[in-house]
Image (tube, rainbow, N blue to C red; front, side, top):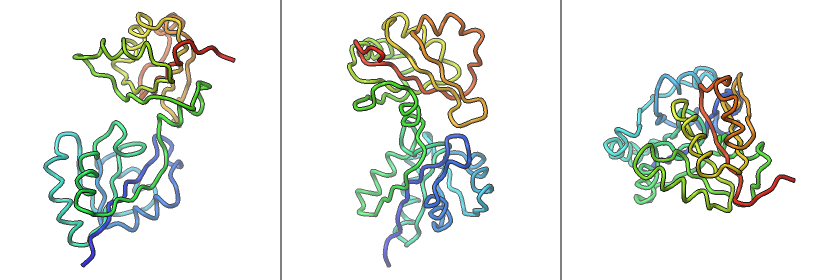
Amino acid sequence: MENGKLYVVATPIGNLGDITFRAIDTLKLVDFIICEDTRVTKILLDYYQINKPLLVVNAHNESKSIEKILTKLFSGESCALVTDAGTPCISDPGVRLVNKVISENIDVVGIPGASGAILALSISGLPTDSFVFEGFLPQKKGRQKKIKQLSEEERTIVLYESTYRIKKLVEELNANMPDRLIVIARELTKKFEETWRGTASQLLQNFEKRITKGEFVVLIAPLNWKEI
């Protein structure tokens, strides 16, 4: 019996229409779907009338779930790995699973699609020929050291940040790189999507008037870069 395959499937980051035909076909084809939260994934599956067994794998149980998934793959079942939004394994669980599946000589197939980091880059106006993706910065230990390192970065910097720390991040950027242009994309592809541009101090001037709920992609211009 041939082993099954693991499909790494990108899903929408907000607008449910932002999914490829191939991704839909794959979700219909596989025997089961690995997701972070059944409530979130079920919204997408119900929208496209897909009914498949769901297996929850998140940061807390990823290691424990791997053997169960491997057993299914060895028995010939194929599965899709999805995240709550966007491309799996990018600041999301799944890296350990993919690595282990590869080590067992089981095929891993990528189904590309939405990525908040790449979308934000494409609309930022900042250099895209070379960039560094840092995802979420450390919350405590090592955070200030990392920000200091990034202040010398000569490539466009891409970060993710949460509702709860977005203002703190802008304040930290103001203290460490006050002259750099910053682009903040909030709630990409969703109803209240918006993009803010300016230096950290400019953004802070009317920060209290802004809606700061949602998911944020923060882009920072390279050191010594000037707008055209």
